[in-house]
Image (tube, rainbow, N blue to C red; front, side, top):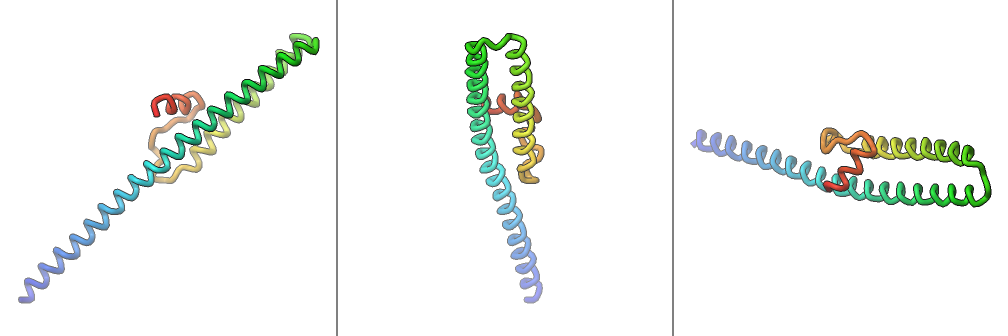
Length: 123
């Protein structure tokens, strides 16, 4: 009789442990999937912001040219603007990577702006 109770306890506890383990695994998968969707949405917002910034920069250069500013100055301004845009891109991507949960550290890695934009195309 006592053997039956021990077997019952062993089976019960192993079943409870296994179901808890499986449940945690499914929760991690669900969390990764949820965060991946959020990350993709943030990347789309970044892409839209980048487009708007580049459009504003083009309008600025046209305005400078219409104001009879020399081409050398416009070129200098364009180079500085491009540096600022590149720094913003790098900062935005790094911030997004730092916000990832630890369970996603190796999930769909990208390290540069171009890699992140390619992820949107695949996404």
